[in-house]
Image 1 (tube, rainbow, N blue to C red):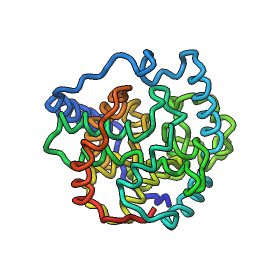
Image 2 (spheres, helix red, strand yellow; image 1 turned 60 degrees about the vertical axis):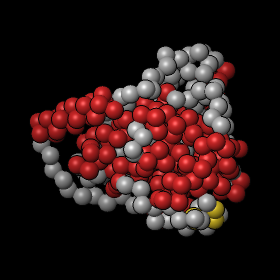
Image 3 (cartoon, rainbow, N blue to C red; image 1 turned 45 degrees about the vertical axis):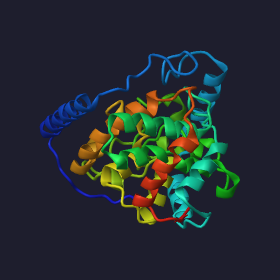
Image 4 (cartoon, rainbow, N blue to C red; image 1 turned 60 degrees about the horizontal axis):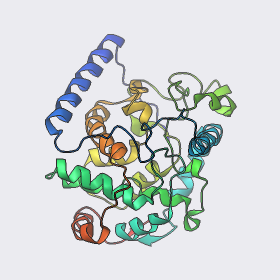
Length: 308
């Protein structure tokens, strides 16, 4: 649960620190920016993450966010974390979970409607080309969305608003940069004085580890990896847990809650996000061809069977 930890940082120092981290991230990205180039349009010929364009799919995406913003409360998140931390739903390997995920299509994603295993492999293969020596990053890309199995009946068939979509902190004010922010007015936390201030139940610099995020596949997969003893490095776990936290890595919101380690890990999340978002394509990856390589990484960083 959320732990309030004092980590005072004066305003001018925080701004200076933020600028330094931004510069470091830019240097790391440009140094590693090799073969992958982001396309101008998604698989539907539209701009990526465009939530305003009129289309039938966009109407469904907006309805998704309406339900998510109304129902993702501080108490709901605590209840979900308590329930799923038991890891008593299944016992299977990482690759078995990849295949299971083939049954899921993400209703919150305006850019692609292919089965999820293709998105995982497209992301991983694009990163593998540009970062051939960072095998932990290849595997992180492969498994980052595995938590979406929460939508399947074996895992209580949670509604999609409790599984996918952009994530955000609960227990403090909902930032106006949230997608379809207007629907938060129906969330009871927005009227609770304990939760509707900038810091809410947290304190500046407390670290994202101590902040409750809206419940979904990110936090669940992080929990599964951590509890099953993965040897993935800290940046890999950070990517898994916060890759849907677009408010942070795209909009720069909520940085006042971050620790020094969070800023270091954010550099890798910025790199990962480019591939996660822009590698989505109708050109499918040959699963059987690449499986042996990824299985070798699974064997390196995870036990044979995991509790889910």
